[in-house]
Length: 222
Picture (cartoon, rainbow, N blue to C red):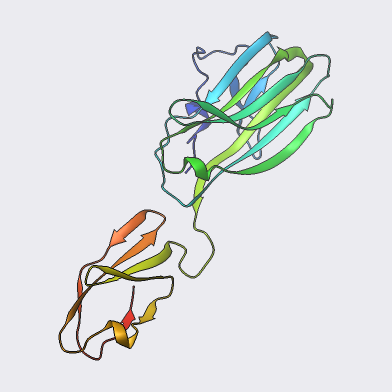
């Protein structure tokens, strides 16, 4: 899921469409174009944000945020920073923060951050440039912003296990796809009713009632 479909759709939180201090501009990138926060016109005690539209929850067991970041620095007399944040509907949470305190440039760096805690809600992502005096950097670049979902490793990553009931009584919980009912638990003189639940990352799902007949004590679950 690409957060920003095109550079001209990037938001600058209230700034009119003209070059101003702190505006994120569509310029060179990794590869071009990218969003760039420039030093000029110079500003002090500033905060400027690049904010996504509301992103619908993807309900993935693993969700990650990926982006590339670059800093062309000028000096260290004033501290300038870039925060990467996620909004949960109420509060902005800090995911990662960068600054110019070392005096060195930050070369193009690809980040891949786990944001699975927010996979089941609608959310926003923002990049917030802020600092004491923008004249002590040249520019920040943000590029290739992506939110994506993954399945955990394993033969059946969505399936956590089965709760197996015989005649409304819990028989067992198993992660296997077959189960041998102990002989003493089944009487072969009449059918018995069986219900099982699959527990997945989306919750517990009930399956239709099954009827077991004599000589069917080995269950195949799916």
